[in-house]
Image (cartoon, rainbow, N blue to C red; front, side, top):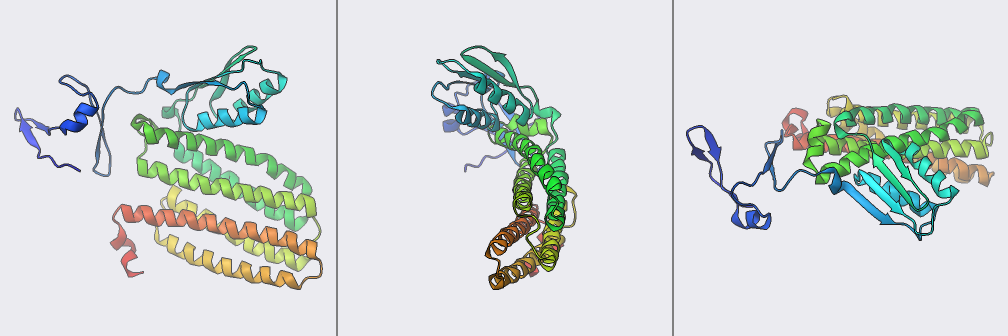
Length: 344
């Protein structure tokens, strides 16, 4: 770190000198343009060079040795890191399976379009601009979908409703699509300060939304897991067993919902401490139920029920992760005295 004293130039302009070594490394000379990004936390970021053009986010790849799975992974990876145009060249030529995979990717990734196809080349482009995206609204939508998925998954287990369970598994792709969109913007913002400005948020808020969305995506995965278990082993539990499951599963979902409100709805952060306590108590209760499984004669049913309890335990843990993020962000904003953090 270097320090500089502010000077008054011309009676109206504040100026500071730049570190010579840094300026030389960045190729800065008299007349060079620098980009200043003031942040709400009191920092002022100085960016040398020119703003990124679309050409800076173009990639051309040779995928001649890729199968369809590798092709899908390559496209998704480039999408997530913020590439705007991706050209995939296959010297051996594409077959119908490759084209079908390409179309599926466009359906699964928001804003991705297949702009050009030929025997040996596929050209993907992202058509959504960051300024048209609300990361907060995307995360809120994830919350609503995930909580509904979890609620329906519990109902499917309790009522042995395989039709409802089947519908849950199809909704997981919508959650994944939203999470990929949030991840893409978060990754872009790491390297491109303009993305933060276009999104109309701060870097701290963006990280909060990304972290919260990540927990939602995991909850959705466990809702899908419970739905799958309901389809595979429906009707194999005693009524008292499903009653216990429904009770602890509903509590785990409430923990996630309450924690999400801290980040997304500005609920008082003191609620986070109650959530941490409730999550610990629920974990102890689930462990006690899990121990009683060893007393059951039906080993297969006990094993499956143990998997359901594991999803309950993990769901509550993801809610705890969100609550902890709320506390950490509050500390960074220097509100410790207001929430009594120093007394805990």
